[in-house]
Length: 106
Image (cartoon, rainbow, N blue to C red; front, side, top):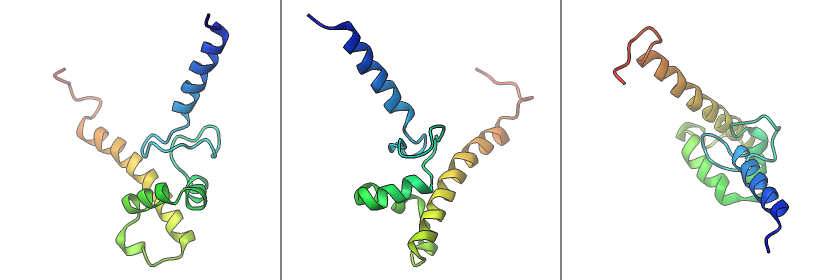
């Protein structure tokens, strides 16, 4: 016999896990503020300290070659900045390409 109340808890837990992921990188952001939807400086510092593999992947993707020789603090700030910019640039590009007044085929 299955306890239906435990099923509800499992579903709720899985739903909350989804909402704690960065929209861009897909990594867990539960260690950040509740309303965070992108990985921030706090999250990057957490991964640097606790999960070097995830940090390395994020660093390789979002840190430019020009910033590789800077201090860790500056690198973390730059990574967070690039993540925010990437998200905003995608939005701005779609607005630029498809203005509201432009008719859509589909």
